Length: 546
Image (tube, rainbow, N blue to C red):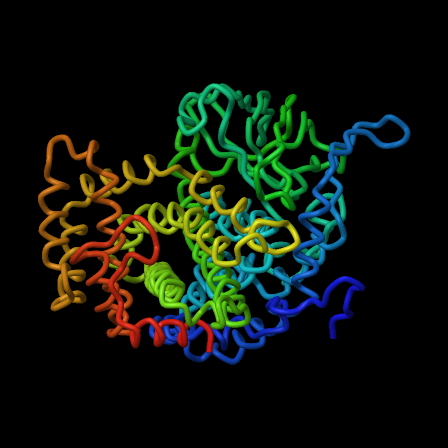
């Protein structure tokens, strides 16, 4: 109960949106999980949703961001340590994510795909965790994804998996093989190259069975990970390496941090600039095949960028809808004002389609090891899904802030943090142009497989407004000799067609609305410009948050 001030009484403010079940309140998520093979995990996911929707977890997310990490280069005696110090709330978030298997549940103990619906179930948890605190998920993502790259070097994988497999988080600065759980990061980009990693100048020299690496990385995220996958130029060309924080003799490896990045968002997570001075490393994969090796990891990190972006949008929408149901303006609750209802319903439709799409993508990851079509689906659609969902998130989250007015803009609430967090997913692991070029490359290299995927979209969207026209547009555009110039429009259309197809499997009524407003008819650039009936709007909002 609020206490009155001497000058006024506090009322007409929405209560905190916490101590809620993030899963059971999210009908589109539950339906998408069930349709994509995860029905048996609904109870487990509801338990996860209640835990992560608690006020205690919300407080941990806030504290981890209000107390960003600090770089400690030396100890009190002057010894170089290169440690990063985190607030206890960050370590608690890491421990809860590890306990839920967000870093390892898609792999068996020997590093093989877990199969079943492991990707779908893990994605649902990752999507809910992103709604509370996204920064700590960076090392969680990289640890999970690194197993795909380590598979190219079975001896290294066999050593690492017994320490990756436990659902434990061990923050101790100690040799990884002595710990009860480990995390892995990655270092790819350099000052002169950025996305063009073939321009990397970091050198790797063979030293018996290992290598000594000298050079730098302009961005190396999560510097307190126990080991990193890095790219360096070996004798045969660009190669992937496993670089631990400690050498085999137990001494600290020559990984020297220069500074932590002062980032727009992602504040709880440390990102560093680093130099290597003959740092110890072991080769992963063949010499000269570094990009082919590490791209296996990159595919999975791109998947998580998309999942997290949709989670952020879902959280923004839920907070906006919760607020508008409690806030009265002009003798009506905000949610009952026709224009506000139109805006919220349009946004709810976008999130429904995005959830259906990312869960469909995760099902393809579950099936890819045994199904060639699913593998082709991943290669074509992963960059398209990342492009559309990650590009959508910043503007979407701005709109949710506006639903709260000034309350949405201040740091006491979560929406300002979400807004600052959102751009990193579009930038990290390949910006928008890179994603579009990857789609074009997939089409060029696997034209027949891509045609089969597009045929499935035709079948799954048959009868939906604008779907046939979208397919025809894609067929024309992807054949154009100047296709790169119009690639953004084509990739956005591809993603929206895939979203309509995915949504048609989970919620056909909503799929028809999405197709009518995105693929057919006209839809303005702002949310609230889609023509939705009052009944459709109310149904969408009820599905969003009962």
